[in-house]
Image 1 (tube, rainbow, N blue to C red):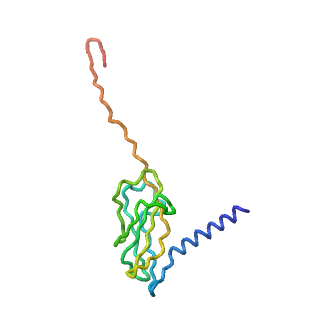
Image 2 (tube, rainbow, N blue to C red; image 1 turned 120 degrees about the vertical axis):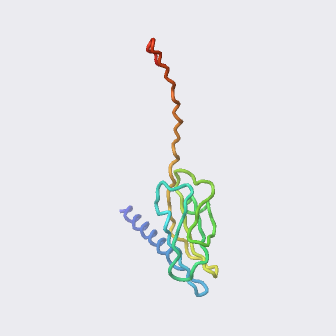
Image 3 (cartoon, rainbow, N blue to C red; image 1 turned 180 degrees about the horizontal axis):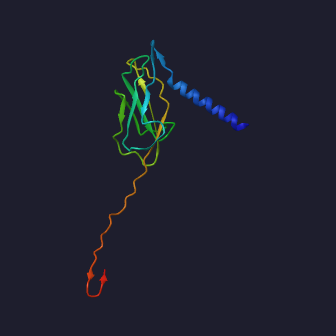
Length: 153
């Protein structure tokens, strides 16, 4: 029954992470809630190499004045492709194209006018498209027909 206990522990851990990420952060009498991811949808396959990410502003607590956005190939965010702040509820990646056929991870959090930051959203993941296969252009052959000997070549 060791595997059953492992499943119960992992389920509890996931629930704790999900619940914790949706809780507000309180400071100076203001509660700051995280935004809600919209797209790229969780688990999206064949994603663009230059994607746009969108989220909804929280409907509770202090109104955010900006958002911290992070994009990484590391689910633990030990390194970043993007680590920036934005003032709208979307971010369009315009750097070098993302790597083909690769898992990517993103998250976002709200920042209140006081500078208080919410918890990060639950990490979202997506997988970029496979590299397209390029076939060489066909090389048309020239047919020569000699009516005297029936030669085609």
